[in-house]
Image 1 (cartoon, rainbow, N blue to C red):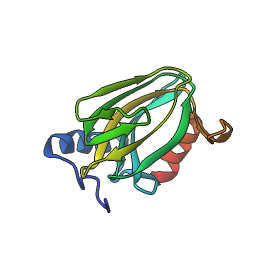
Image 2 (image 1 turned 30 degrees about the vertical axis):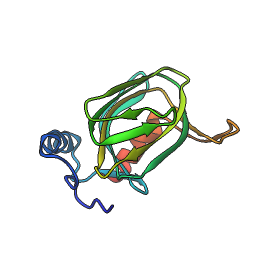
Image 3 (image 1 turned 90 degrees about the vertical axis):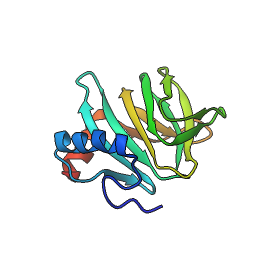
Image 4 (image 1 turned 45 degrees about the horizontal axis):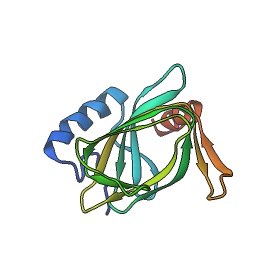
Length: 148
């Protein structure tokens, strides 16, 4: 699915939230983060971490990753299937504790929009547990500055 504008694929009740967030962030588009994945930073946390809206095209898979802090996720639109088989739909909330390792995918025909609070760093890991890439708050801030 091609998502070219900030509002493509968004339900009307989500559009107003996204438009407001884009204005506050000083952006006119979502930051691309790879095939089928975009983000909209809302805040960088002084103690490490960030708050963002995440948008995924249907079928997009987040690879295996480990959190170095707790994560709070609220689905605003669309559905995702966690690697433990749970399906998380609109209005559903998921808490991930520090050290949680998981992967998940956007499922169904609708664009997934997720409000997420990430505390600490995130490691993308191989199946053997080796760290392939680490994302820090400084990395996220640098990506934001470069995109702006």
